[in-house]
Length: 339
Image 1 (spheres, rainbow, N blue to C red):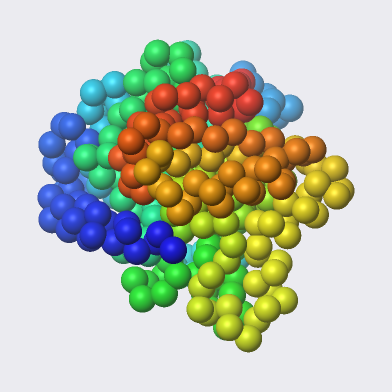
Image 2: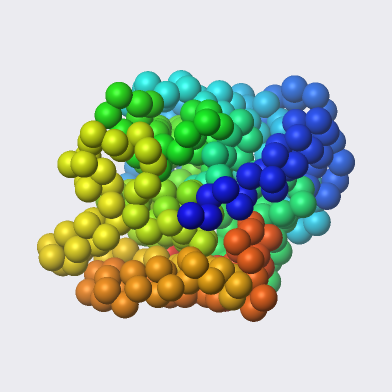
């Protein structure tokens, strides 16, 4: 099991972020500065030239996020916002961080909806989602790849992965526990739709995660293909293994990617795309990923494996892999900004 390998890294990142609120390359942001990614009234949105029959999903209930930090470099000083979301469908309350790429703010794109990537951390992913960290530079890298033409400009949403740092919940609705599966697949995407210009198509929704978050990404694209077309599982677990499943074998089976893949193949779709990433030194993870691809990577389940040379079970390895081919493959199969 590889979840534990992320713990020291996450602890360091969490302490760094909480202590400094460092902007991704630009220094700290104003304390508690409000930031909004959509107009305050939806009425104004419906007067735009795109019209009601557009593919654009306009924001419905924009809120003020608190500015956590800013993204420098190719991110052009764009804000990362954070809010505490009380999930109406899951009943779970947790923090969610959001970021929009520089293209989102450009006048020429004012009537366009943008693709979305839900990014999940490894280990417990609580109380901080490490993808907001300035050392990993996920947002800055995505902005640069978009500028270079090797990636679409993604809105990135970064929720907490678990309700605490004591147990893994496998990104699932385990009986008697907080409904983390519903939180990740329903409440978090709804928050994005309420606050950003998105698109009314699954072709514009991806979910990425590392280790335990990679399992959640893999499971979600197979379990919720009506929401997500693309998953990027980084060094993922392949089957559920939370001790909280004890006594709930039927429900555990309903959240097993192998079972979900077989069912999706049997019914013929809809097609999903799974861009696995692993470091070349992940000696226990790689065989399991290769076995999954061999058994289930056919029919509507399209797979790809990016192996990062000399890579380890780490978020830094997976950002490297994104830039070495994964984001180009992902972006070629998704819908970009559209009016």
